[in-house]
Image (tube, rainbow, N blue to C red):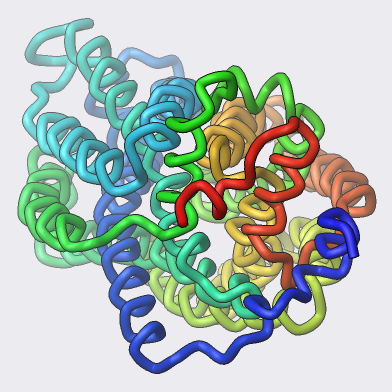
Length: 469
């Protein structure tokens, strides 16, 4: 059987079917824990900004806006700066990660995002330093986004490249599950501050506490990440690059050799990213501006939904190992296209139970797409350029999807005074992802070493595993 035939068989080589020894599984759990802790820290800080942009920044940094929605849109524009910076971070850290390793990039990114977030909490408002306030906010947001752009690829690949072929979907979904934990912590801190402080004190200084707390958890996350190790398959690929000077790695190489993989990853990411930010960011805008819904109750609803989201993601990852990557992802895209049409009428009831249910259902639909992403994208690229490939596909899409979703949705709401155009916008996004999924090759159970072997065979290289022996 040729290398290509073995890959088509889904990595059915002996290594794919071996039982994972308990000692190896214990080591894998440590890798997962280290990846998750750092991811929780970084996404706590990233999503803290999203919630603060909805509740605080429009008033503190953009008080001269014509209306409340104008101020929120201005705050979301600075929010979008982080998404614009993320592909740049993905390119830079993807290159570094493919050359030096996943561990080193993860140590740098967690420090960068922590410092930027802490300084956000120290910024004076517009009333104190004028336009310097939003300008400095934008600069720090750029640094934060740049660091997060390099974080995701390293965190998920560290786990995916250590995982057994048959359960890669499950294990690599855990860093994804860390994202709602980070969001949950951000929401919990802000919720606590709104409970214990009057509204004027929360707006004055209470929100800053959540940003300052990042310093504590950054130290913890950095310490844990110093104790992780690189995956053997990465060490093999690095030896291949060092031994064969004629071959390359990283961003330029993956753009030349695997453009279809990058476009496929972007298509998968598109609807998932838009759906998420419509749920966790625009839902706040809608309920607060249209219905003047109580902020504390809204944050509590998000808190409950994030807990469910965290619990569901690993189970969906396991499902993608059993049923396949494509059917699970396709279900998420199709169901996601329906969410807004029943969720906003549920919001309009102002019934707390229905609001919680609407947000929770939306995040469960999202999990059907989100959980399998690390495994799917890891299986699209060979190891020598995998970090760059997944980072480009994942982060570039964020500019067109997640960064613009709250802005577009807020503008549609302001223009039409209805949620229906927002629902249509989400449905179109999901249709794009459905097309991407349908054209996707099923890779459940694929061997990453077989993928590397196919790459070596295709480009006339010595297999990485052979060079490392």
